[in-house]
Length: 454
Image (tube, rainbow, N blue to C red; front, top):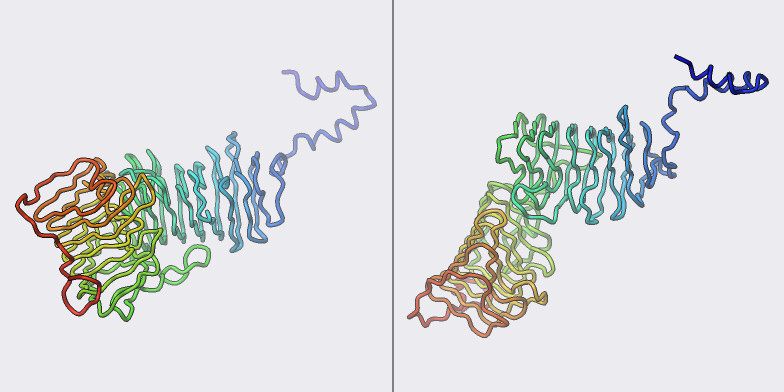
């Protein structure tokens, strides 16, 4: 075989041969891993661009991403290591780390999605995360084939989809993917199966400490037994990139009900006065919560859901008025002697909800495609909703008072629709009400409360 050197020497003037031989080692030297990579910002990481060769970045400050970081697919495969030094990487809607056949090592760093909607933040083949916090994505935080977590926090990640067995809100576990977690806290994941949704052929192994809280509808959606749990108990102290493993317990207010937070332990709350919900209450998996209202009111906040329930949770209301308390129910909701007013947003039931002796009054909806009181939707479970002895009065806006979206709504007993617009209900209704019942239910609230019942 004719060598590169002989071809070159045959075409280069003798006077230039010595210069060429002196520079030849530079041409064939081992890569420096910097050539062709995007420029590094002051914080120690590129703000965007394409990484062409293996590289280690050491952060000297918090970083702001202005675009995607793509990692080239080449042979040998590229490894990108980010040593965060306790710093945080944030970005706009274009922020992501993308690359196939790529290894991404994350050490002592926080990846913060800042609540901006995107399909994913990290989509690479292999992720090794140690002492890392992965938070605030509005889309899947991580997709990958092999994910190894050691001392990692996954928090406040959500996905806009609600299909059963979806992509997961924090981690997507696709076909033939392997996920190994040691000392992990995953909390407040919402949508698309919950925290992690194991698709067919995916496996999850959990070891060391493990805390799962506020993940809705499931912590781990696993219809194929891909989860092997060898964890030893909940995490304590610091987790991830210096975050707290345990949030303050959602203790009751003087009125008798927590003002917000995750409910991880089954309990009965008895109201002693009107109560206010100031931040979202989340019922974790396998938690049963009963609220005995004594005729008092619970006031929520408009524009977001005041209560969200996991798929295997139970929430019961007895003798209580709800004002501006929007509920997104994935689990089992029961209510007796209930008055509901000023809803915005309205109730969403994708689980099982049953109301008896209930008055739904003075609810309004500005979105013409929504509904004023409740939608029954079969996105996860049956979306079964039953009303027994209920009155719907002075509810206006949206599509109508009730909406059945490929699910079931049943009407039983004494049912009255009074002065609602534009419609009492849309979609199919199973009407089994008593045709001879002339009674109008007016919130049969009893006890010492002053919630406006009769």
